[in-house]
Image 1: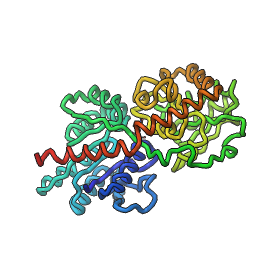
Image 2: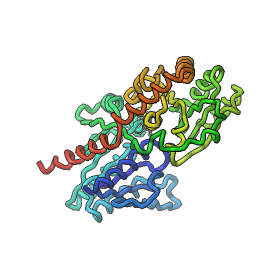
Image 3: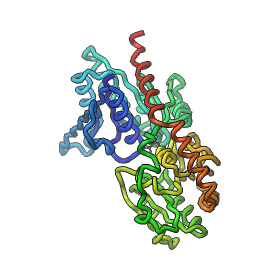
Image 4: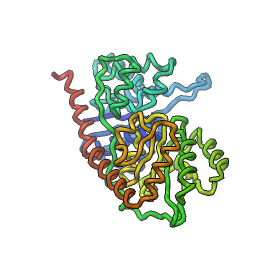
Length: 379
Ligand code: GMT
């Protein structure tokens, strides 16, 4: 198949999933065209069967807000036409599903066509898409996609609920990891560079937005550090970073908390971690938790959203209600204070990640879904 993929190319789960999917599909013999304003961050090397098209946005002085969505629609239209794409697969509905719909309409007006598959990732449905300024166009665009996927049952339910579209048929295709990349034994962990030998390494990786509840990460760590010698390593950047830095100083933990900033690849770091914290308000899936699990790192996080489909409470980590930092810290102490229990949970986390979410299992689900979508007209 010839497939156009559009995603947010910057740091973030949806871009990571889209890029890994493109790479895996290219390895399986498909021709993949990435269409976006920048090279996706995990797409750094030449890869056979994979092409990147940068969208140019004209910055005419009249444009206070340069219309990226329109420039993207034009690129999608031209690339589909020039390369004979079968399908456009867009990740994160806003604005990509609307943009792809425009491109498809342009193609139809010229007597050709392309199928449109939208993957819903999270806040495009649970937060941004429900804002009155985006709700109606998000509903319109997802209803007009030829195929719709969501990364968890939770997100599928939220979409039906929020957009009242019982006629939308949403296929759940979970996120995935390459077990060979996220593998504790593969990397020689430079523990000494992160923490003294006798300290446990607690990690959090995100884009530091409010939904991640970074202050809870610091509070859980503060309680843990009272009884277990440990260090908190924070990877990423975003609007809540300053608040987290301030809080760690306020709690007198600044010498135990390290902010590493944004990093392109986290597999090597995860291989050093003893515990991963993800106490988010909501996660449609929690890809980074899956990456941690595949690296043999138990996860402590919040219950009540898609993370419950990734982490099995009591087996591969612990989940507690959002904001219950006391319970999360207690679980962290129990886990890190008992080597036997930690080994058991670490092994179960790796096993569960590989058995349920390995790319070999999930990528073919996308392939068969594409085939189903493409077959509709031919039937
Ligand atoms: O929805 C977002 O916040 C953005 C998105 C991203 O690009 O990072 O994250 C979402 O998609 C990821 C990949 O499918 C999921 O693993 C994250 O759980 C999800 N984020 C939220 O639901 C907050």
